[in-house]
Length: 237
Image 1 (cartoon, rainbow, N blue to C red):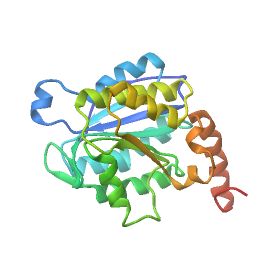
Image 2 (spheres, rainbow, N blue to C red):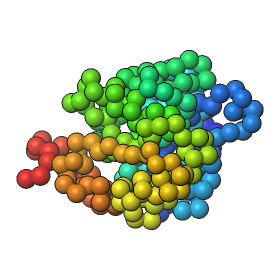
Image 3 (cartoon, rainbow, N blue to C red):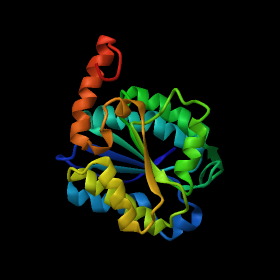
Image 4 (cartoon, rainbow, N blue to C red):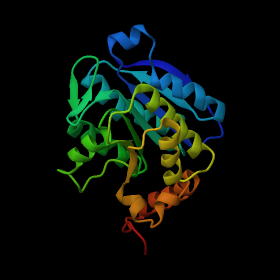
């Protein structure tokens, strides 16, 4: 079963972070945890963060499809949901403590979850080649983009670079920066120029969505939910 390793509370943030990580045995022994490092820093900015550790694909699927949804619906309703996956990886998929999981499986699980959240999941992939691998899996199912925004690297950042980058991303978002500005801050903070992002269909339909803050996205999210409930077509009138 997935294990909760660290949790912080926050009352002022308009988003919450749900970290799922799969450290190898050597990293467990050395207490290496990107999620815990992020949570401790973001607690100072009032951003609620939950960190769970998984060992295999079955536990990862449960965390994404069940635990992440429960956290958003029951503990953080009204906040933008951020799913942060931290693990070793390559173009084929994520490398877990016990085994591996292809990007196509992760994309399928997230597609269902993103539907539950009305297309508003911000997905952070902290894994080598994560952005490339994930986009490669989506190429076979382009009609179902399982995120509002996808953030990751096209190269191989070190652990320290990843932690610094995502702390910068979430800190910028917490203080009202746009997605584009926050990702630029990732590159400067980590000295890793290969961080990038992809927008899902819902944000593309909003126009200049890369310059929206999460507060503005929340407003758009409520409009999106209203449209879904009224069965109006998505996109600008």
